[in-house]
Length: 406
Picture 1 (cartoon, rainbow, N blue to C red):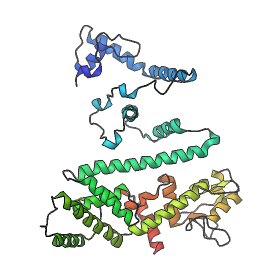
Picture 2 (cartoon, rainbow, N blue to C red):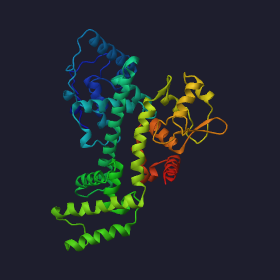
Picture 3 (cartoon, rainbow, N blue to C red):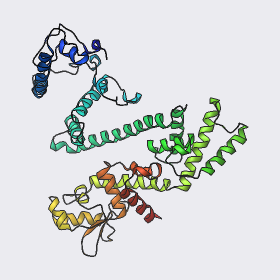
Picture 4 (cartoon, one colour):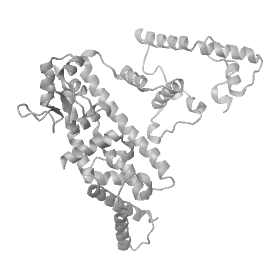
């Protein structure tokens, strides 16, 4: 680590907060220069003690710039900043090409990295949530606009993380393989042609299987895959190795990938999961938007236990500001009771013999999707693509729903 990379300037004056040139040089190299080691340590520790005050002054100044209309979007030039956190980590955080989206993204990464180093042993959920609200939050009367904005961002985050998993996972698991990106595109096109949602974990597992079935999490009949490859080879006259000629390699990959997808459809509940995903998408919208006499469906359904036990409407009423009648009205419209219209693709709730309420197996799956997966149902494809990444409860819920649909 070169001191020159850190703006170690001996003429840089010491300030109340900022490390002087000699202090920076001492931390980087151990060279005291003119001052004594004890003096430098005392000065540095004193500035560490002032970090809270320094941050407070920074927040105050930025807020006042905004209040006085001095602030403008060009006040900070992210392209002129030099980022340091990766240099001081024991191991760098992997960043994929798609994530290096420019100076503003680098600045955001640096800020997040600083918080990560300061709070490495704590759950960052609240920190990230409040940061998101600080960026896109709206006044109470504009909560619907905020909801739409936040859900869109969460959806984009999920997609970007799936992409990160693919780019990093494929580069690690498929190390040394050429044409991974091309196989990714072929797989996506094949899935789309079959009407299957092309989630990145599903694509990754298919690509892995195409290259080496032992690398993949898919549980398929390998002999059937070999038969398809043998048919391809006999039709082309090639020897039984993956072709090195690029003009033929796309045909090889598409044939193998199409075979894998067809076998997934035949040997696994992939098509059933696709149909289920469509139902979950529609019913997630119902949960978010439906209300009866002021009782919000999202609030009522949230009160039901997910562990297949039941709860009385009085207990639900105690949790939300709605009458017992309103609570019952919402529960009834998500159930199979014949005297009320069904607000979902299939029943979500059911009334027990002792007049309490519980979630149906499908209701438990919808609950998971709405409240634990931020309304995105694509997680259920892990039942086929990454079965071991699901919890026992999640595997049981999906199995129960699939069995009920047979």
